[in-house]
Length: 244
Ligand SMILES: *[C@@H]1O[C@H](CO)[C@@H](O)[C@H](O)[C@H]1NC(C)=O
Ligand SMILES: *[C@@H]1O[C@H](CO)[C@@H](O)[C@H](O)[C@H]1NC(C)=O
Image (tube, rainbow, N blue to C red; front, side, top):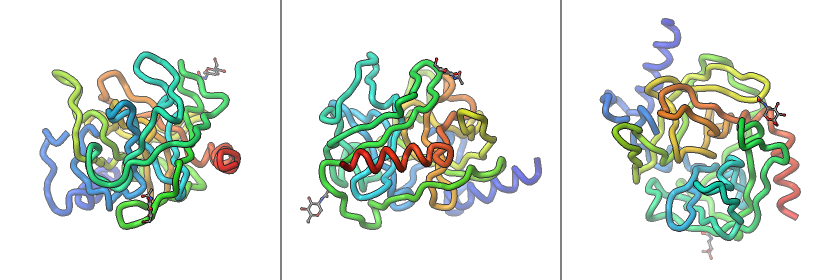
Protein backbone atom coordinates (compact mmCIF):
# COMPACT_ATOMS: atom_id res chain seq x y z
CA UNK A 1 0.00 0.00 0.00
CA UNK A 2 2.73 2.43 1.01
CA UNK A 3 4.86 1.57 -2.00
CA UNK A 4 1.95 2.08 -4.36
CA UNK A 5 1.03 5.45 -2.84
CA UNK A 6 4.64 6.53 -2.99
CA UNK A 7 4.90 5.56 -6.66
CA UNK A 8 1.71 7.44 -7.38
CA UNK A 9 2.98 10.59 -5.70
CA UNK A 10 6.18 10.41 -7.71
CA UNK A 11 4.17 9.95 -10.87
CA UNK A 12 1.87 12.87 -10.20
CA UNK A 13 4.84 15.07 -9.45
CA UNK A 14 6.39 14.18 -12.77
CA UNK A 15 3.27 14.73 -14.85
CA UNK A 16 2.07 17.91 -13.27
CA UNK A 17 5.51 19.49 -12.89
CA UNK A 18 4.90 20.52 -9.31
CA UNK A 19 1.25 21.41 -9.68
CA UNK A 20 -1.20 19.52 -7.48
CA UNK A 21 -3.92 18.03 -9.69
CA UNK A 22 -7.44 18.99 -8.65
CA UNK A 23 -10.22 16.40 -8.59
CA UNK A 24 -12.18 17.99 -11.44
CA UNK A 25 -9.18 17.60 -13.74
CA UNK A 26 -10.57 14.57 -14.73
CA UNK A 27 -8.52 10.78 -20.23
CA UNK A 28 -10.29 10.25 -16.55
CA UNK A 29 -8.23 11.82 -13.79
CA UNK A 30 -5.54 13.14 -16.10
CA UNK A 31 -4.47 16.51 -17.30
CA UNK A 32 -3.32 18.36 -20.37
CA UNK A 33 -0.02 17.09 -21.70
CA UNK A 34 1.93 18.49 -24.62
CA UNK A 35 2.58 16.33 -27.65
CA UNK A 36 6.34 16.52 -26.90
CA UNK A 37 5.59 14.42 -23.78
CA UNK A 38 4.01 11.71 -25.97
CA UNK A 39 5.28 12.44 -29.51
CA UNK A 40 4.26 8.91 -30.64
CA UNK A 41 0.58 9.71 -29.96
CA UNK A 42 -1.65 10.17 -33.01
CA UNK A 43 -5.34 10.92 -33.46
CA UNK A 44 -7.28 8.64 -35.83
CA UNK A 45 -10.09 10.62 -37.41
CA UNK A 46 -13.15 9.57 -39.38
CA UNK A 47 -15.45 12.11 -41.08
CA UNK A 48 -13.55 14.92 -39.39
CA UNK A 49 -14.28 13.55 -35.90
CA UNK A 50 -11.80 12.04 -33.45
CA UNK A 51 -12.32 8.28 -33.53
CA UNK A 52 -9.41 6.58 -31.77
CA UNK A 53 -5.82 6.95 -30.71
CA UNK A 54 -2.74 5.22 -32.04
CA UNK A 55 1.05 5.10 -31.73
CA UNK A 56 3.82 5.75 -34.23
CA UNK A 57 5.99 2.65 -34.62
CA UNK A 58 8.03 3.90 -37.58
CA UNK A 59 7.89 6.57 -40.28
CA UNK A 60 5.00 4.84 -41.98
CA UNK A 61 3.48 2.44 -39.43
CA UNK A 62 0.83 3.18 -36.79
CA UNK A 63 -0.28 0.69 -34.13
CA UNK A 64 -3.89 0.84 -32.94
CA UNK A 65 -6.78 -1.36 -31.79
CA UNK A 66 -8.65 -3.68 -34.16
CA UNK A 67 -12.04 -2.36 -32.97
CA UNK A 68 -11.03 1.10 -34.27
CA UNK A 69 -11.63 -0.38 -37.71
CA UNK A 70 -15.39 -0.15 -37.04
CA UNK A 71 -17.66 2.87 -36.66
CA UNK A 72 -20.36 3.35 -34.00
CA UNK A 73 -22.81 1.43 -36.18
CA UNK A 74 -20.32 -1.49 -36.37
CA UNK A 75 -19.68 -0.80 -40.06
CA UNK A 76 -16.21 -1.77 -41.19
CA UNK A 77 -14.06 1.19 -42.18
CA UNK A 78 -11.52 1.13 -44.98
CA UNK A 79 -8.09 2.75 -45.13
CA UNK A 80 -9.48 5.68 -47.16
CA UNK A 81 -11.97 6.50 -44.37
CA UNK A 82 -9.18 7.53 -41.99
CA UNK A 83 -7.06 10.63 -41.58
CA UNK A 84 -4.34 10.62 -38.95
CA UNK A 85 -3.22 13.77 -37.18
CA UNK A 86 0.38 13.66 -35.97
CA UNK A 87 2.48 16.21 -34.13
CA UNK A 88 -0.23 18.18 -32.33
CA UNK A 89 -1.56 18.37 -28.76
CA UNK A 90 -4.90 19.40 -30.27
CA UNK A 91 -6.95 16.81 -32.14
CA UNK A 92 -8.52 19.40 -34.43
CA UNK A 93 -5.61 21.64 -35.47
CA UNK A 94 -1.86 22.00 -36.03
CA UNK A 95 0.51 19.14 -36.83
CA UNK A 96 -0.07 17.22 -40.06
CA UNK A 97 -2.98 15.16 -41.38
CA UNK A 98 -1.82 12.00 -43.17
CA UNK A 99 -3.82 9.44 -45.18
CA UNK A 100 -3.82 5.71 -44.54
CA UNK A 101 -2.77 3.31 -47.32
CA UNK A 102 -3.51 -0.04 -45.70
CA UNK A 103 -4.81 -1.63 -42.49
CA UNK A 104 -4.21 -5.07 -41.08
CA UNK A 105 -6.16 -6.28 -38.04
CA UNK A 106 -5.34 -9.36 -36.03
CA UNK A 107 -6.92 -12.37 -37.74
CA UNK A 108 -8.24 -13.67 -34.40
CA UNK A 109 -9.72 -10.38 -33.23
CA UNK A 110 -13.01 -11.10 -31.50
CA UNK A 111 -15.44 -8.17 -31.37
CA UNK A 112 -17.45 -9.65 -28.50
CA UNK A 113 -14.69 -10.20 -25.96
CA UNK A 114 -12.05 -7.94 -27.56
CA UNK A 115 -9.36 -10.62 -27.57
CA UNK A 116 -6.53 -9.83 -30.04
CA UNK A 117 -7.83 -6.25 -30.35
CA UNK A 118 -4.80 -4.99 -32.23
CA UNK A 119 -4.12 -3.64 -35.72
CA UNK A 120 -1.44 -1.90 -37.76
CA UNK A 121 -1.85 0.82 -40.36
CA UNK A 122 0.51 1.86 -43.13
CA UNK A 123 0.56 5.58 -43.91
CA UNK A 124 0.35 6.86 -47.47
CA UNK A 125 3.54 8.93 -46.99
CA UNK A 126 6.39 8.76 -44.50
CA UNK A 127 6.33 11.03 -41.45
CA UNK A 128 9.03 13.62 -40.81
CA UNK A 129 10.27 13.06 -37.28
CA UNK A 130 10.62 16.11 -35.01
CA UNK A 131 10.27 16.85 -31.27
CA UNK A 132 6.53 16.47 -31.82
CA UNK A 133 6.59 13.38 -34.07
CA UNK A 134 8.58 10.35 -32.92
CA UNK A 135 8.36 6.59 -32.99
CA UNK A 136 8.15 4.40 -29.89
CA UNK A 137 9.77 0.98 -29.60
CA UNK A 138 7.79 -2.13 -28.67
CA UNK A 139 8.31 -3.42 -25.13
CA UNK A 140 9.86 -6.88 -25.02
CA UNK A 141 8.34 -7.89 -21.68
CA UNK A 142 5.31 -7.03 -19.61
CA UNK A 143 5.88 -4.55 -16.78
CA UNK A 144 5.58 -5.91 -13.24
CA UNK A 145 2.42 -5.17 -11.25
CA UNK A 146 2.87 -1.86 -9.41
CA UNK A 147 4.86 -0.26 -12.23
CA UNK A 148 3.74 3.26 -13.12
CA UNK A 149 2.72 3.66 -16.77
CA UNK A 150 1.29 6.57 -18.71
CA UNK A 151 -1.80 6.34 -20.89
CA UNK A 152 -2.75 9.24 -23.15
CA UNK A 153 -5.44 10.29 -25.58
CA UNK A 154 -8.31 12.56 -26.52
CA UNK A 155 -10.92 10.24 -25.02
CA UNK A 156 -13.70 11.35 -22.68
CA UNK A 157 -12.64 13.15 -19.50
CA UNK A 158 -15.94 12.46 -17.78
CA UNK A 159 -19.01 10.30 -18.33
CA UNK A 160 -21.44 12.15 -16.07
CA UNK A 161 -23.83 13.86 -16.61
CA UNK A 162 -22.77 13.18 -20.20
CA UNK A 163 -19.62 12.19 -22.06
CA UNK A 164 -17.37 15.19 -22.41
CA UNK A 165 -14.38 15.24 -24.72
CA UNK A 166 -11.25 17.41 -24.57
CA UNK A 167 -9.65 19.20 -27.51
CA UNK A 168 -6.26 19.03 -25.78
CA UNK A 169 -4.35 15.76 -25.34
CA UNK A 170 -4.70 14.22 -21.87
CA UNK A 171 -2.28 11.96 -20.04
CA UNK A 172 -2.64 10.08 -16.79
CA UNK A 173 -0.32 7.88 -14.78
CA UNK A 174 -1.78 4.48 -13.99
CA UNK A 175 -0.50 1.51 -12.02
CA UNK A 176 0.01 -1.79 -13.82
CA UNK A 177 -2.26 -4.35 -12.16
CA UNK A 178 -1.08 -7.44 -14.06
CA UNK A 179 -1.61 -9.62 -17.10
CA UNK A 180 -3.53 -12.76 -17.87
CA UNK A 181 -3.55 -14.98 -20.94
CA UNK A 182 -5.50 -12.38 -22.95
CA UNK A 183 -5.06 -8.90 -21.51
CA UNK A 184 -2.97 -6.47 -19.53
CA UNK A 185 -4.82 -4.42 -16.90
CA UNK A 186 -3.88 -1.00 -15.54
CA UNK A 187 -5.65 1.95 -13.96
CA UNK A 188 -8.26 2.39 -11.29
CA UNK A 189 -11.43 4.25 -10.38
CA UNK A 190 -10.47 7.86 -11.02
CA UNK A 191 -7.34 7.21 -13.13
CA UNK A 192 -8.10 5.37 -16.31
CA UNK A 193 -8.79 5.73 -20.01
CA UNK A 194 -12.24 6.26 -21.51
CA UNK A 195 -14.17 6.25 -24.80
CA UNK A 196 -12.04 7.68 -27.59
CA UNK A 197 -8.74 6.63 -26.04
CA UNK A 198 -8.97 3.22 -27.77
CA UNK A 199 -5.96 2.20 -29.79
CA UNK A 200 -3.75 4.62 -27.88
CA UNK A 201 -0.51 4.00 -26.02
CA UNK A 202 0.30 2.66 -22.57
CA UNK A 203 3.93 3.53 -22.00
CA UNK A 204 6.64 2.57 -19.52
CA UNK A 205 10.21 3.88 -19.88
CA UNK A 206 9.52 5.25 -23.38
CA UNK A 207 8.43 1.82 -24.62
CA UNK A 208 4.98 0.81 -25.84
CA UNK A 209 3.68 -1.83 -23.42
CA UNK A 210 -0.04 -1.78 -24.20
CA UNK A 211 -2.78 -0.71 -26.61
CA UNK A 212 -6.00 0.67 -25.08
CA UNK A 213 -8.79 -1.81 -25.79
CA UNK A 214 -11.69 -1.95 -23.35
CA UNK A 215 -13.08 0.13 -20.50
CA UNK A 216 -16.02 -0.16 -18.10
CA UNK A 217 -19.29 1.45 -19.18
CA UNK A 218 -18.70 4.50 -16.97
CA UNK A 219 -14.88 4.44 -17.24
CA UNK A 220 -14.82 3.91 -13.49
CA UNK A 221 -12.34 1.06 -13.22
CA UNK A 222 -9.20 -0.43 -14.74
CA UNK A 223 -8.61 -0.32 -18.48
CA UNK A 224 -8.10 -3.53 -20.47
CA UNK A 225 -5.08 -3.34 -22.80
CA UNK A 226 -3.62 -5.67 -25.39
CA UNK A 227 -0.09 -6.49 -24.28
CA UNK A 228 2.43 -5.38 -26.88
CA UNK A 229 5.08 -7.86 -25.75
CA UNK A 230 2.60 -10.76 -25.92
CA UNK A 231 1.67 -9.70 -29.49
CA UNK A 232 5.21 -8.80 -30.50
CA UNK A 233 5.65 -11.53 -33.09
CA UNK A 234 2.21 -10.86 -34.61
CA UNK A 235 3.06 -7.14 -34.75
CA UNK A 236 6.47 -7.62 -36.38
CA UNK A 237 4.95 -9.99 -38.90
CA UNK A 238 2.03 -7.68 -39.69
CA UNK A 239 4.34 -4.68 -40.03
CA UNK A 240 6.59 -6.58 -42.44
CA UNK A 241 3.68 -7.85 -44.52
CA UNK A 242 1.76 -4.56 -44.68
CA UNK A 243 4.86 -2.87 -46.10
CA UNK A 244 4.77 -5.10 -49.16
C1 LIG B 1 -13.25 -14.88 -27.05
O1 LIG B 1 -14.01 -15.40 -28.12
C2 LIG B 1 -13.32 -16.36 -28.90
C3 LIG B 1 -14.22 -16.74 -30.06
O2 LIG B 1 -15.55 -16.95 -29.65
C4 LIG B 1 -13.00 -17.57 -28.03
O3 LIG B 1 -12.26 -18.51 -28.78
C5 LIG B 1 -12.12 -17.11 -26.85
O4 LIG B 1 -11.90 -18.19 -25.98
C6 LIG B 1 -12.83 -15.99 -26.10
N1 LIG B 1 -11.88 -15.49 -25.11
C7 LIG B 1 -12.25 -15.06 -23.91
C8 LIG B 1 -11.16 -14.50 -23.04
O5 LIG B 1 -13.41 -15.09 -23.52
C1 LIG C 1 7.81 15.66 -45.01
O1 LIG C 1 8.61 16.71 -45.53
C2 LIG C 1 8.56 16.83 -46.96
C3 LIG C 1 9.57 17.88 -47.36
O2 LIG C 1 9.32 19.08 -46.67
C4 LIG C 1 7.14 17.18 -47.38
O3 LIG C 1 7.04 17.28 -48.78
C5 LIG C 1 6.19 16.09 -46.91
O4 LIG C 1 4.85 16.43 -47.19
C6 LIG C 1 6.34 15.88 -45.39
N1 LIG C 1 5.52 14.73 -45.01
C7 LIG C 1 4.69 14.74 -43.99
C8 LIG C 1 3.91 13.50 -43.73
O5 LIG C 1 4.54 15.71 -43.26
